Image (tube, rainbow, N blue to C red):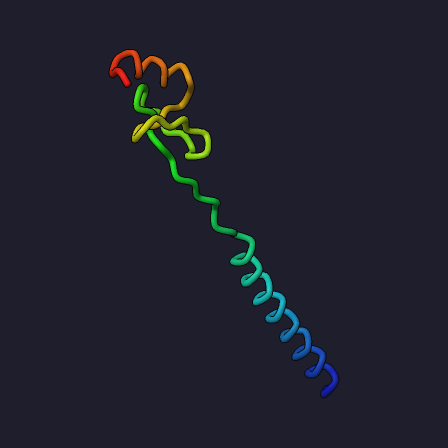
Length: 76
């Protein structure tokens, strides 16, 4: 009878340990997303990542065509 109790206790400890391990593993897999600063195109209003935006003085554009169109409307 004592051996059965030890085996049941060992099984219970193992199940609890696996449950705790799986709960803590879920928290680690969810890495925070990479955040990038988004800039608004002065011509069309589309937001683009900062590394893709085309700057001109204090405004930004999503493409060269929009930069040129904005410059034609607003001058330099």
